[in-house]
Every structure is written in C-alpha cells, then in structure tokens.
Image (cartoon, rainbow, N blue to C red):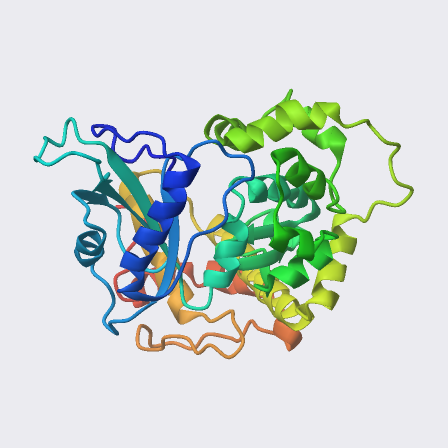
Length: 381
C-alpha cells in the first residue's frame, strides 16, 4: 500500500539499508506463525521504501492464524485487514529509535508499515513471481491483456472471447502457476528474471522482449488512458515511468509480418499448457447455460405482461417455479413436488432445446400453471 494504510500515523520512508534489516527482522517474526515466508524482490534502483511487503502461507497452527496473533508477533500498535487466504493485513509497528530511552506518544513516534499477504494454498511461489520487482507485472500484464491472457493471484489464464462478451470471469481458462513456463510462453528470459537487474531501464528493456509488446499501444496509453490505466499510473511510479519516460525513447519499428490473432494465441496456450479439455468443457457449459437463458427469456416474453408491480412480482414468482419444475439441463431432474401434472421433455440430443415447443406449451397452459403451481396466482388482481 506504499505506507498509506495509516494516515494518522507518522510513517517515514525507509532507506535501503534499513529496509534490508527490517525485512529480515519482520520475516522472522512472521515465520514463527507461518511455514512459508518470503519478501518479493523490489524494483531495481529504488532509493527508498514506503512499506515492507511479506508473503506468507502454511500456518503452523492448523486452525489458522488470528490477525491479532500476527500483530502481536510483529509488535504492532495498530492493524487493518484479515489473515484469511487471499487477504492482506497491514500493521503499524513502532520504528526502533536509537537513543530513545523513554516512551513517546504514538503521534510523535515513527512507524513502519508492514503488509502481510496470506497466500492461498499452493500459490506462494506464483504470487512471489507476480509481485516481484514492484510494478513489473503491471507492465507485462498491460501487454498480454489484449492477447486474451491474464495473470492474477490464482495463476495464468487464457480468456475465451466468445464467453468474455457476456462474462469475463467465466471466460478464464486456467493454464498454470509455473513461472518458468509462463515466461517461456511470453518469450521472456527466465534466467534474467531470476538474476534481477541493476537499473529500472534494464528491467524495462527486458519487458519489451515480450512477444506481445507493441510500442504503439503503450504510446497510446500515454495519450488515451482508460480509468484503470489512469488509476495505475497515479499509484504506480514505476509503471508511470515506463509509460511516460521509457516508451517514448523506443524507436517505432515496422510492424511484424505476422502477428498472432487472439484466437491463435488461445489455441497456442491450450496446446502448450494442455488445457484444451478444460476449455472445451467450459465452452460447452457456457453454451448450454446461454441456450437455457435464451429459452427462459423467450418464455418470459411470451407470457402475459403485467402492468402493475404486484403483477410483475407474481410473474417473477411464476417464472421461478417454472424453472424449478422444468429442467432444461441434461442430467438434472426437476423438482416434482410442486405440481400434479406432467411436463413434456424439451431436451433433445446433445443438450439441444426445443425452445418453440417449450414456449408453446407454457403459453397454452399459462392459466392452469398459475392455478396449479403452488404460490402462483393470477397475474392481475
């Protein structure tokens, strides 16, 4: 959080020498409660630090670690956040003062902000990878997003464009959490990443070797920023330096003869990471859900359209009960406790739906359905 979690406390910037000592000290404190603890490497050339970021996983107590216990281990006076998996807790710890023998008030006491991120099981190595070198993955993430790729705290994903049109989260197909395999797929040098760089410019130059890097896109970012980009530039100094200072210095090269389309990138990813079966299952489920939604939309449109709020509410109740009574998903049995009449089967081979037959049956039986289904009443009083 850059040392901004406790605005009422004095949290001075930390020198590189202090930072190294404090990282070691606080890591040991966290290690008393967690089996895995790591501090991601910072951006090269950083002259000072606003806070200390620590990743932790594998709590030693099987019941978990209470945030207050972690605060006590760190010697914190104040804290925010939680220690559930995937969460980050911030702690304000009094900074050791040389020659200070007496207690001084919190108002005058300098603090160190320690942010401890609790990784979900099996993700610490991956999260250390994506959080290494400060804003580096903001830079790389901006390059790969347009190719349909996403890296988040859970892993590396490819997004199916057909599904993404309606639901971005459901469009994500998990590929891997292996840093070396991801960098190889992106065309980036894993050995150089592990070794690190001496200057931000060396790191920037490494990032531009990503096979999806387009200097023109980043130059446009400097002129036409989306809301997320504006926020990122405001909060992330390294990302801002890359976009406004480093990118303009790069000569615009001729466009490559062949740039892989998003569809081609997806197919490559599914093959390389052996994720085709998972993708095909996801796409099949999505298309089935879409068919079901379209079928129920057609039923809703065909039913009588009430004009009063009461009537609309009762129509909604009728639709809910119809969905419980009529199964449009293969292998899912309907709830037969609500009615005393037979409903035809509208599912055909390969999960297809007889939408016209469904609409026809519902409209022809609308009056009886209102009366016979428990809780459904005439749409208009």
